Image 1: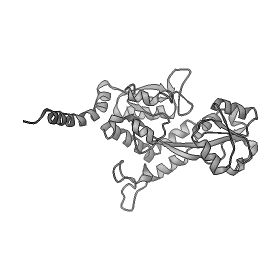
Image 2: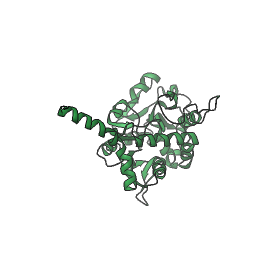
Image 3: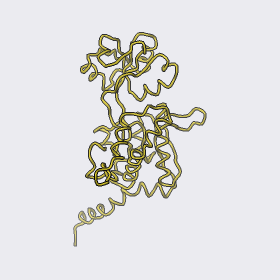
Image 4: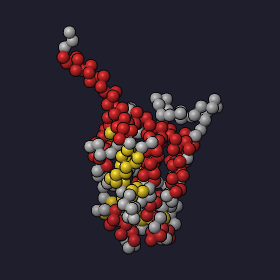
Length: 291
């Protein structure tokens, strides 16, 4: 007769694969997919003041996932500080919320590959400066947010003296008032701000982004390797291969990014024998460049 601890271990091993499938089973059983999206980032995910419903590129991606599963979509607006906690506590099934892929976040959640977008550090500067390279900012007053991870890197690499203020709001106010020539900021936020003529008339983002980080769709960490993760991964592959991400960028007035163009070219490329260069889906043999 086997010892009790052996029987318990065998029982746990038998149940483990079932638990990974539960998320997809539960979504289909309830007929509803709950997706967390940003509620404060224009173009990517923000609350429409007329309807109170989140809109933007990422809510559109969430709608595609729900359609693939033939279920209703429920969008939950989340702030940066609470988005991973919402996933951990089971408030949402999927998180699509401008989430950069980092080692720390990989310990907190299951990050799906391939990545669907990427962002980096850039500057919003007065058009009259006619900037053409990062070196043009030397001896200029560049403001930024205190504690931003890219401040030191930009300072070391380009010799720019950054005036680090307490918040992005203060940095932008200093730019508008003429106390700064440019502001160092996340390029996705700059793109969104430039859609507003109050900024777009006098300011621009003329330089290539630096320290670009890819974005991932996130699931609860228990879903790593499960059916839900596989479904989401295949959806991202399809978005890249079909050009859907570029279409959505154009829909929301976002310039099609170099990342989007590169991923579309990779995932739509066929090798000499006619096979997909990146594979039909993500697997152990998928080239790193495709992820």
